[in-house]
Image (tube, rainbow, N blue to C red; front, side):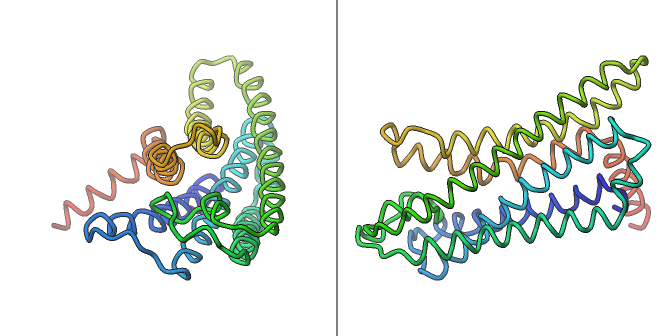
Amino acid sequence: LHTPMFFFLLNLALSDLGSICTTVPKAMHNSLWDTMTISYTGCAARLFLLYFFLSAEFSLLTIMCYDRYVSICKPLHYGTLLGSRACAHMAVAAWASAFLNALMHIANTFSLSLCHGNVLGQFFCEIPQILKLSCSKSYLREVGLIGVNVCLLFSCFVFIVFSYVQIFKVVLRIPSEQGRHKAFSTCLPHLAAVSLFISTGMLAHLKPSSNSSPSLDLALSVLYSVVPPALNPLIYSLRNQKLKAAAWRLMSVRFQEC
């Protein structure tokens, strides 16, 4: 965990765990006890945590793309550009920006007056569903904030695409097949995680509102809030030989102790 890649993987795992713990336990509670209620403060807390962990996850995925870019395109500068202090600063920046983003969303959304009932068509609180219940024109502030977020996410997406174009240019020039395979094995798990996160988020938030139905909204919400955090550990562990070797050594030691 002291190497940059595994340090960022640790942070990504924490954000995935936080996302799952924010949404799934309450959904299981509602199913087992046949209840559909949540308090106002509980809704605000869950919405804050969800946006906090999802924002941190996308920031960390962008930073991990930079890690892949430096390790393949500028390997001689890797120790300088991604030292322990630089990695710590980037991780702190990712979590701090996610906290600020979630805090601004909560402050804007829950300052609105709700006059269209108190029934949400989701299994967890979500900003678009809350905006539908508002009759105040001040909801335009939240729409503007969402627009700023979309621009920032698009900038990160462009950076990721540009980085991988440069990476694949370098990888395809590697003379040995073993070297190309090692480079692709390093990049493909991250590329799969980014693609899964972006595609599910776009499906959930860019669908036409005229074709929206409660069941479709529910399925898409589960898709982007539960599926990527649940699959990320599987994606990285299956493609990473070091992770599998470390897990096997740990299991062997525990078996010998027993």
